Image (cartoon, rainbow over all chains, first blue to last red):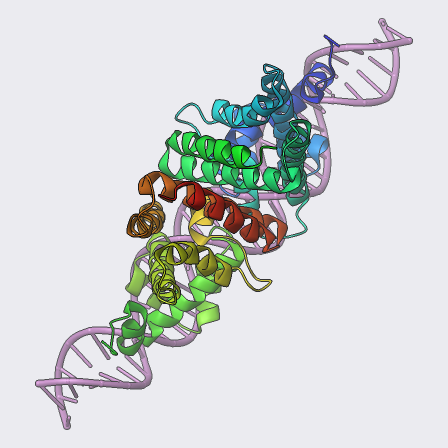
Length: 198
Length: 198
DNA sequence: TCCTAAGTACACAGACCTGTCTACTTTGGC
DNA sequence: GCCAAAGTAGACAGGTCTGTGTACTTAGGA
């Protein structure tokens, strides 16, 4: 269990160049946007040959999907770790807001990578859209599961309400470059959780 | 007052070609994204010469800003009209959710134009970012003003909470291509307004 | 009627984009 | 040490992008 198979780490062990590509792509896609980041920029930043990118990922679209999958995996790990800090089911539920908070520290915060990708990619068949959608579904399921464990009323509805607050806070925080919307969202979440109390 | 100076209509009267450009740009930017829409596509769609675009707007960046300004103006008009349908201050406040609802009908819904633009444009000095930010500020001020008129507790905080719900609903609705998140957001908003009641 | 501002048509520059090709070099497991 | 897989280097094709230059034509008010 100490040697948990983090897909990114294991890929680094066996394909170091591919890992460098993914790492550079992640940074650049997130910071500058997907359309604004060319493959030449990625390979230059990664210090690898362009052919390495195409041999390992197939093309830019698949690389974008891989970028989001990687981010989703790291997000899940981080969320799990933060949730486990608490015992009380209600606090475990609200810990999700804390997890979001840890991601938006720093002045390089550019909002949610999945929302940004979905905003940027109009094509409904782009492979990255599937990844973004399943990520959001995962977050909502996480919330619903914890809400149910906490014995709250209508856990599914509450989970969606909390998701909306989280999404709104993420988007607003990145527009204003402030983490204050997350505090507001957390306060509103406490109200809604209180209302759903037995 | 019947001859209210809608900037787009007045521009159409005196500069028909410029208006065609703005109208085409609005459609294409919103539907396909800003980066994905080239100026050649816009002028072809508008049926005007490329030079007309540059003479009237200066360049693509300024055209993007004009697109958002136009959308903001139309949004304000629409919001005002919907708000005036109600007498009760609390209902007027919640009518904002209805206004959002009217914008996300139809299968061509692609989310909030301002959020999408901000997601897509990483450059903090881009003229469109200023427009997007001031639009969101306007929405929040509208909410705060109505919350205060309704005599609710801490109208500023409540306004921000409602804004977050609206933003979350917009983003989620466009990802799922469903208007159901808006219903959830409205229900949550009623809870929060209830809590803030006298 | 004339004159100015607005619009047209279209070629062009220069940069950037994704993806492919070929030939060469490194590296890790057997 | 061998050999296959992985990676490298760099040119290249074929597009697309924003923005400019030039010479021409319309339209509307004084």
